[in-house]
Image (cartoon, rainbow, N blue to C red; front, side, top):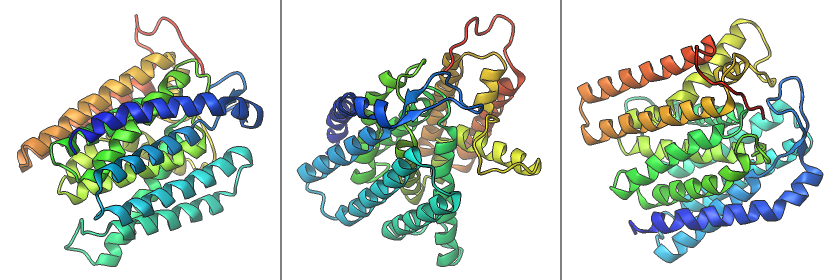
Length: 342
């Protein structure tokens, strides 16, 4: 079963790319994202490629589970599949006709709550179970929205999800997580690689909420499963840049009494492009940072001691702080001669 992810990655990539090619004329006709004052792109661009990613993940993971014959995880896999489909439907409707924020949030809470209940296990046994479940649901809903918030630049979601899902797949291959999370991480990695050529700056296709919402759910579930295996530090380190950028931006907007539920261009990565960074430079920096965070997460798994955990956490926080500071500061001399817009 260790070889399963190595087979699943190219299969999911090929299926994702093929579905994108098949769906693209329909998306061009019915799902154009038109530029607004808050957009990073300058011409109408089709969105909704996430539907291909979702289908590729579900089909490839389903096939992998069928071949492997892993029955003890079948119920959790079934709940996960329905949760992903539910958020994909919500996102697809919102892409075509924007839904009220309260309706979107309510649907996300129901879906995440059902998935948390299906996973089971205890992460914080020292606190009451209802409180732990409530915190898990809150964290899951935040992560779903976090990925949606951060999907505002060409290749940005690719630069985040590819390193995170790749690291989770490798962790599973050495026994760090069970077979189901390992397989899902592998097919998510493949599906994102299949999408990447179409989203390369300047992008010809966007994910849309139909993709960002279920992708956020999948990664939140994967990190939760990793944390339940006793690797909470690694589960925090892997998405640390996304957590920091989105959370700090939300806090700053709330402090300024701005409507935090509305679209905006004040994330650190968006400020970087406004300050003279090219899109390629931003996503390359984020990708490199995520590789470093994955390496630090591996340190906490290979040497599970408090000095290693504290050291890796401090170094990870320092690296993220440096990137955020550089993005906010603007272009340095000799840096980023050109600029690509989305």
